[in-house]
Structure formats: C-alpha cells, structure tokens
Length: 120
Image 1: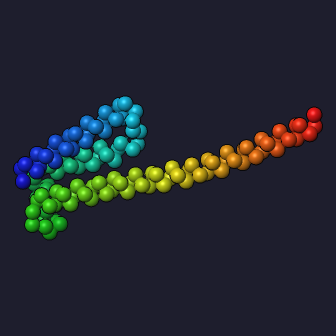
Image 2: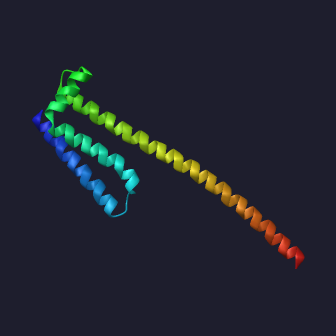
Image 3: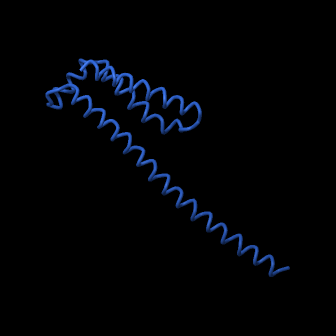
C-alpha cells in the first residue's frame, strides 16, 4: 500500500509540474489547466493523507484503501474529462455561430460590391 501511495504522490507531482510548465509555455490556457491542477491536488492529498483515504474507503464500502484510491482517482479524471467535453461542445457551438456570421457578412459584402459596380 505504501508503495502505491508513493507512486501516486510522484504521479500527482509530475502532473502538477507538467500542467504548470504547459501553462508557462502557453501550450494550455489557464482556464483549461484548472481542472488538471485540481485533479493533481486531489490525488496528492489522497496519497499523503491516509486518514482521509481510510474515511473514503469506509464511505465507499470497499475492503481495500488502494481500491478506494483508484476509484477516487478514476472519478476525478472522469469529472475532468466531462468538464473538458462541455468546453469543447461550447467551443463547437461558438465556432458554428461565428462561421454563420462570417457567411452573412460575405454575402452582404458581395451584394454591396455588386451595387457599387452597377452604379459605376
């Protein structure tokens, strides 16, 4: 169990470092990094605070703390992925609306160009 907790600690610290480095290099936007930072902090807290992990194990009704840790980590990453899916859906809807507005503007510009050519 201690080995797994140590591996989870290293993993969460690596995730924190990777996300912060990506934000610093502008590979990921700050608003998208918040979910990953929160997930890494949750994993770090659970891997270092065994009392909390034991409470979660009892609350979940599982027999092993490592199983509870993996279930909690999986649930955390599912929440992160759901949040990112919501953001992607919103961006797709915004992109569609933007394309439609550009098409309307192009149509109006073409009509205006035709009118100016007809007057000349």
